[in-house]
Length: 194
Image (cartoon, rainbow, N blue to C red):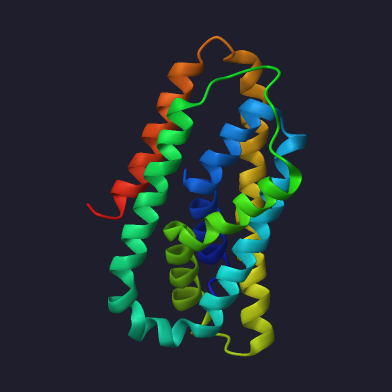
């Protein structure tokens, strides 16, 4: 019997815990408000769907390829997280901050997924452990992959909302907030190495 409770718990925990998507969503929420993060999160959803679908359909092959692609993906993902951390650390808070252009925000969210090791690892583990032992049809794999992506993006929206609310509370503590967010991203990257 399919372990629904375990699958849902795993999906929730991996979606709500800090990672590049959540931290970037919160950072954007702090700067431009919840509504203006929706384009970024739409990009995240699109990229998340693409990645989880690829993981679902090629999971068997990925098991063979992981030793070859793991190190380059870790290096690329870590470098990107460091870049994001530095970008956040250097950013300033401005109540009149220029919001990212809709297309730019969307593409930023989309392309983040292709170097987001957390999304890839979570999708692979979820599909391998919970789905493939019970379902192998194309339709089932696609449905689970899309569900995982929607769950992840829903949690990003929670982080965006928190960032938006927190902006009013922490307007005078920009450096502290940016430092915490930057350190969180750096830990995300370091966590894959230690």
